[in-house]
Image 1 (cartoon, one colour):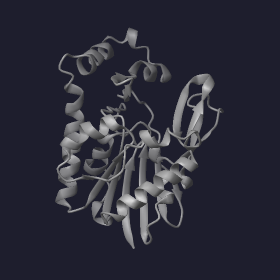
Image 2 (cartoon, one colour):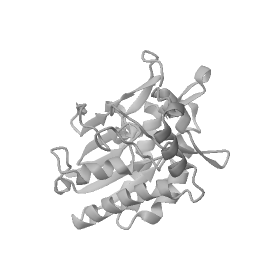
Image 3 (cartoon, helix red, strand yellow):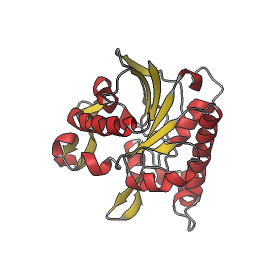
Image 4 (cartoon, one colour):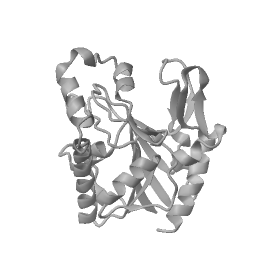
Length: 264
């Protein structure tokens, strides 16, 4: 049996169902019915690491950190990276991933799922395209985590230098470094790696950085799951466009099945 490692953000945390218990966001993941559950290729066991609002900086730390949490690539036959909304500079007070909170582990016969919702999150560069314009929704995220950026001069300076500079390259330098490290480590271990994206802008911007990882023949999934109202969550009162539902994950699973059959 082959073993596959999947790295992703909240889109890899499972399918999502509406739940208003905690206020915002109004949905929760169900790890047993994520898209990976619907990849119809026999004799593959999946290990999934999903990190809320995570990105390449976090994935690189899982390969490079000299800790007990470091992933041993020799245990896997191939890797899949689910990317979205880069650049994501997701930093805790201690490290790109703060292990002061344990992974939430879910196991089935076909996969082991490790879900991490980091504490002490300070910065998350959610990067989206709205009406063909690149928009960083940093203010909304700061508000969500109750950060009063107006009274934090250092944070305001960082925000200006990284996000509002004329060159707009600084934010990408962090991500490019992480991507370069990931590709180097995977190549060094001769571990095949395949990528798919939930976001067209990320897909186009990141591909030039990859020297080892190869993109799967699959469209950016934001163009897929938001075409059908049954494939994603939406809360009209909050104008909240959410994650894939179980039906959406089933469709993603079909797309991944076909794409992976072309390369495995």
